[in-house]
Image (cartoon, rainbow, N blue to C red; front, top):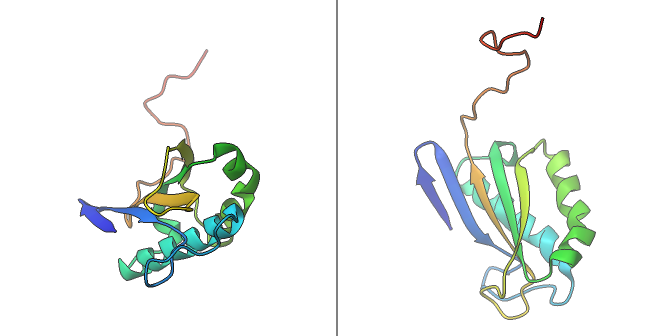
Length: 127
């Protein structure tokens, strides 16, 4: 699902499901995480956005330790597509589909604020 708030787009509940909503890769957290990322990228594309527009990405999971062990599946893909969102992992008691181990929620902004590369001219310098 996606919702637009100002220039930001909220994308929620992207998981390892096929086009009919059936769970894929039951008991394989790394595969579920990879497929959830693919589904998120598809949703971004439908919204006219790319992964580079991601500003925040939350992994909801029933097994935080397992996600931490497989997080490179996600971070390598994000690096490959030039995305650098703030990434968080949140523990949940359960997810919408039995057997689902991960779901992704994201915030994307096609007009992100420019990042400062130089100190602010208003910041005082130490003597």
